[in-house]
Length: 85
Image 1 (tube, rainbow, N blue to C red):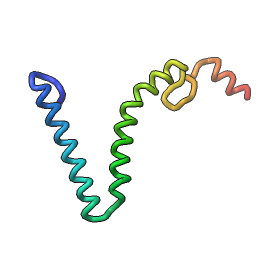
Image 2 (spheres, rainbow, N blue to C red):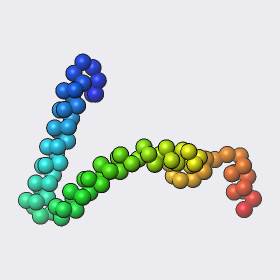
Image 3 (cartoon, helix red, strand yellow):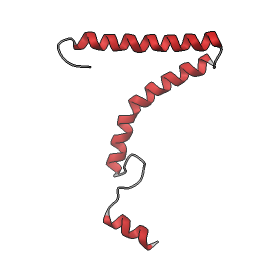
Image 4 (cartoon, helix red, strand yellow):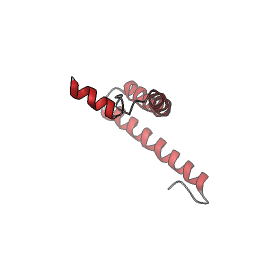
């Protein structure tokens, strides 16, 4: 989807679609009183912050030698230590 000769217009189109979906969801929350509007807005912004922080945290984990679950990678030494416990 994001490529080719119309890359900038495709990016703008994607931005507009995401923005419209967000506005529609917030309007539905407000109209039907299905939830707290402030919490929904905070949740949307926190997702954006998490998306920006994720690559930084992945770099930090990989530098420490941990995998995505926070555990050390399975090596022969780790397996032997677990079996001896």
